Length: 118
Image (cartoon, one colour):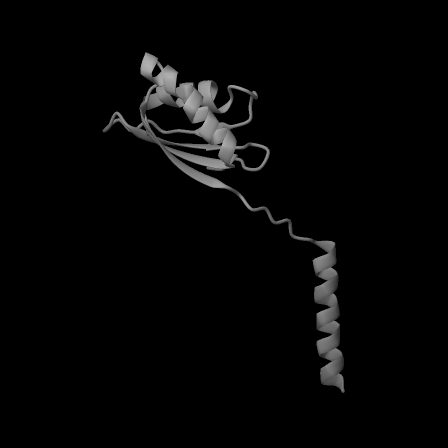
């Protein structure tokens, strides 16, 4: 009988702990997007920004891994001219310019859901 009582008490304490410290779950949408050597300064880049915005607005990703970002300039222009064009501060980003190549990868995320910890 003591064995059953002990098991019951452990179960009861566990259930109370779950009620006291509930878990919050979130299904994040992750997008990888090759933006084809995007620098954001050419007329070709400017003409396709509408298309880039349309795809991103339709899919509503929480995290975007953008491939073929052309340096800091491409990162800044993509963040300002594409991601935050219609709504300021919707996305933030993390970027490290790779000196060994002209084409980089950038991470963008919604700051109301994620933050960067290093």
